[in-house]
Amino acid sequence: MALGFAMSTGSGVVPPWANPSIAFGYSLTRRLIVSRPIYYHPESLRSVLHTNTVVATDDNYGHKEVISVNPRLYDYLLANVREPKILSELREETATMRGSQMQVSPDQAQLLAMLVQIMGAKRCIEVGVYTGYSSLAVALVLPEGGQLVACERDTKSLEVAQKYYERAGVSKKVIVKHGLAADTLKSMIQNGEGGSYDFAFVDAEKKMYQSYFELLLQLVRVGGLIVIDNVLWHGRVADPLVNDAKTVSIRNFNSILMEDDRVCISMVPIGDGMTICRKR
Image (cartoon, rainbow, N blue to C red; front, side):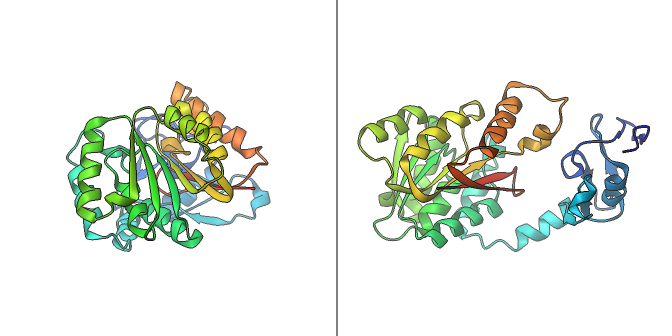
C-alpha cells in the first residue's frame, strides 16, 4: 500500500482504497473522471487507466483481472440482450417518467427471467414493482398456471405496469398487491402460504431489506431463490466515507447476509449489484 500515492484530477485525489469500478467513470477515450475524492491502490489504478480490467488489492487473489464495465463495453453488453419488444416499449415509456433510474436494466431482467426458467419456477413474488419491467420479464417466462405476486405501493407506477401486463397477455399470471409490501407478505404467511413459492425478487425500500428478507425466507421453499437488487448501491457500500441511512442499511444487510447460514449466496456485479440467495 503506497499511502503517499495521490493523483490530481481537478476535482479530487485518489489515495489507496475503494473500488475503481465504482469510483471511476470513463469517456470513450478513457479519460479518468472523478466527481469527488476517492481512494484506491496504485496498482489497481494503473489497471483502470490502461485496460478494461481491475485487480484485487489483496495479492492472495493472485492478481486475477476482472472486467470493469465502461460505457462502450456496456453498450456492447446491452446490444447482446435478447429483449422482447413489449419490454423495450415499457422501458422506453418508463425512461420518460420521474424515477426512471429505479427500473432494472435489460441485462438484469434477462438474468432474472433465466433464473426462473432454470428453476422451472411456477410461483414467484416481486417486492417493488415500479412500472413492471422486471415483473413483466418474469411473467413472460412463467408457464401456464404460473403466478407472480407483484407488491407495489405507488398507484401511478402500477397503472403503467398493469397496462403492459395486459398488452403482453400475462395479466392472469400476475396478482397485483397494492399497498405496503411488508403487510402483504405477512398476510400471505398468515394465510398459510409459507414455503410455497419458488422465487422472489426484492427491489424496494432499502431500509426494509432485512425485514423483507426475513418474511420472504418464510414464504420461499427450500431450494428456492431470493434475489436482492442494489446491493452495491452505486458503489457507496464500499466507501467508508459514505454513511447515509440507505447506504448503511444496505451495507449492514450485506454483512448480515454474509454470515447467514440459512442461505447460499452469490453477489453478482450486474446492474447496481444483485445477491442471489438459495434457501437451504
